[in-house]
Length: 167
Image 1 (cartoon, helix red, strand yellow):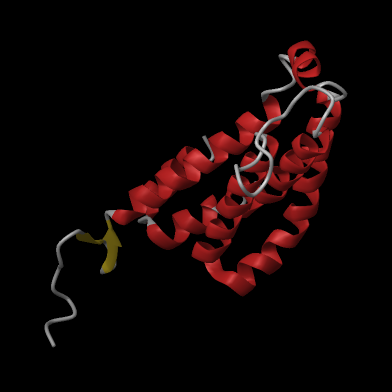
Image 2 (cartoon, rainbow, N blue to C red):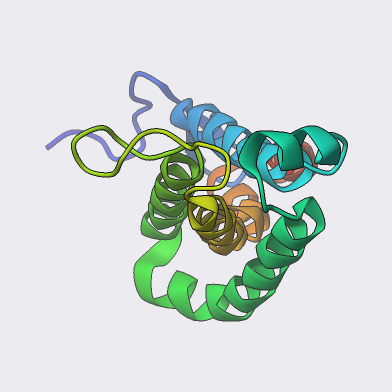
């Protein structure tokens, strides 16, 4: 029981009688961090292309960015379908899972599951695969901040929330 109009701990009632919860800021932080991490992956190798080639061997940093952006384009086309089937939360979680797996793969793997060293001239495919997976992940949280803002934020906070989520 209880009065449905009664304000509960951790929530605010805004104009129009809508309830907004403090957790919306936590989700906004998650989206912002996911966007920051995926952008770091994409754009981190271009300024240090010589060092990347020296460290990993036969890796073309321009190709890494191209693979990332190609995967990103494919996932951007699929994102509306994934979002409509999974919903906002599961889409963002799926995207963050792809980001995590891609980051682990491109960093050399996990001991006992995948050999964890990336020696020069061996395992370059891991770096390419990792960039591809991170590229697939990005639209799943980069194309959703407007929906997050519209669903979880009052009208006066939506523009700010969308901008923060996109960094």
